[in-house]
Amino acid sequence: MIKAQVYAGGRGKAGGIKQASSPEEAGKAAASLLGSRLVTHQTGAEGVPVEQVLVEEAVNTERELYLGIVIDSSRRLPVIMASEAGGMDIEEIALKSPEKIIKTWVDPAAGFQPFQGRQIAYGLNLQPELVKPAGELVGNLFRLFKTLDCSLVEINPLVVTMDKRLLALDAKVNFDDNALFRHPEIAAMNDKGQVDPLEVRAQDFGIKNYIKMEGDIGCMVNGAGLAMSVLDLLTLCGGKPANFLDIGTANNTERVVNAFRLFNSDPAVKAILVNIFGGMARVDVIARGIVEAYSQMDIRIPTVVRLAGTNVQEGECILEESGLKIIRAYGMQEAAEKAVAAVKNR
Image (tube, rainbow, N blue to C red; front, side, top):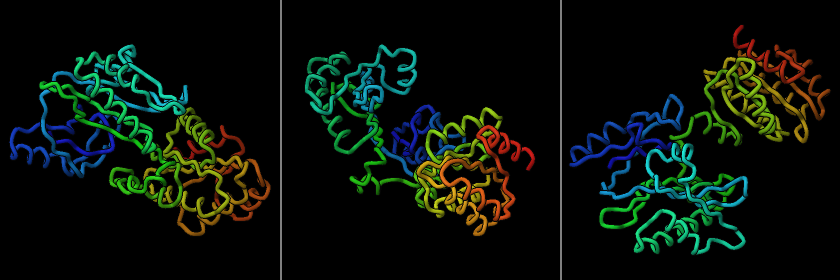
């Protein structure tokens, strides 16, 4: 089996996994994948680059199962999930037949208990001789989940082979970004080639909360909730956000300047919307950052600015005295409408 190594699921249906019966066929399969861009239901229309492939033994399987661990935000506990309906359609099974998903929650105070592994094994209707190894596998998977500060660990498919062995044929592991400081060896494995270049640049600039999107209005907002509201409002007004950017408590002008660097280097951005509600973030610092960005760069993108909150009067004076041709707005609805209009009138 020749498997494209990309940061996305759904590779099988997208043609990212190929079978070969000889070294020559394996070479051709690898050559057809390497250098291509794989488009799956988990990528954008542009896909992700295939720069590596994994070559592994094809296995004759009797059954395909699913096993995974995530954080259940409603219960605030890790939940171990398993299903007899493993394989490529597990998402559809979870959506249409949730009763086929077995779940057991782990209390961090008590830790994983052996009976939970047996509960999963029996729920999967495994043969008696596989119950013990399956229980041990579940326990090992949870230990990995906890020790490495994971946000998701899944084996799909977990198979029973024709000779009655349990094997993990494919796996996915996601790590909590906030815990990577404890795992430098994992952070070093990050493949920046799999991430949008603008997102990589944002990280280099110290802007952690930046996600590239497919629209044409660059957004700079402070606070994740406010940022999501701005994206919704832009869409409601007929616009398309080019990014999610939560600048956070930006009481330094450099982060504001760097946000404008991102906008200015993104050819998709046709207008910029700055929506700041200053709490701990000071509006006058944001305003100075905007003026500084214009002094350092040739910014020809129409910019709509709405400011409110801490030191708003000082911020208003800074923008007024700068003489910059900035489109001013004094409410979120007005700001969104003006940003959409700026794209249309550009």
